[in-house]
Image 1 (tube, rainbow, N blue to C red):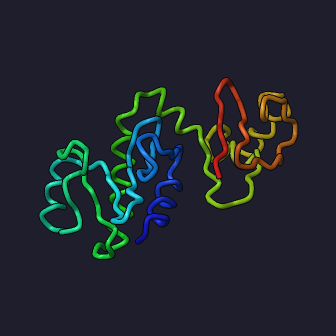
Image 2 (tube, rainbow, N blue to C red; image 1 turned 45 degrees about the horizontal axis):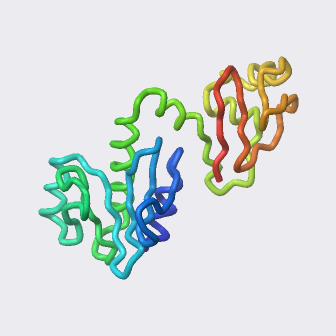
Amino acid sequence: MNIEEVRQICLARKGVTEGFPFDEVTLVLKVGGKMFALLDLDNNPSVNLKCDPERAVDLREHYEAILPGYHMNKQHWNTVKLDGSLPEKLITELIGHSYDLVYASLPGKSREDVDMIYNLKGAEFIELIKLLKLLRIAESGGQAKMMVEDGEVTLNGNPESRKRAKLRAGDVIEIFGKKITIQP
């Protein structure tokens, strides 16, 4: 698994942002403003991932490519070398584990904010009525239709009356005081 594949797995998770806050070779991925993965883009590609302390030790004992977290709290972070020696399934699972640990540690309001992000996962758009059902804002298509017809929904700050409005990356809908951001 290479750096770009790891990055894409991270970005597929809900509410993930990326940036270079430290230097030009360390890509930091966050959820709710907290780091869960740091990708070393330099000559020896690796990713730092948060891990349950007991599991972190166990992984280090079983895999040569998993080391104590470089420049991190070594009790809670591992550096995973992307040298091809680890199964892709394991790396994917460790990314999920790191994300889940950080997400679970977020304050309630931050988790709510992350939950109000919808990831298109490569699709061009999602219809408004479908999104309202998927996020369990509406229990049925009929209820979603009524919400839209009653003017409860805004799209990018403007009232939206089309139940089949196509929501694309970057769009923000608001309903009952909650904002939902559409990500690519």
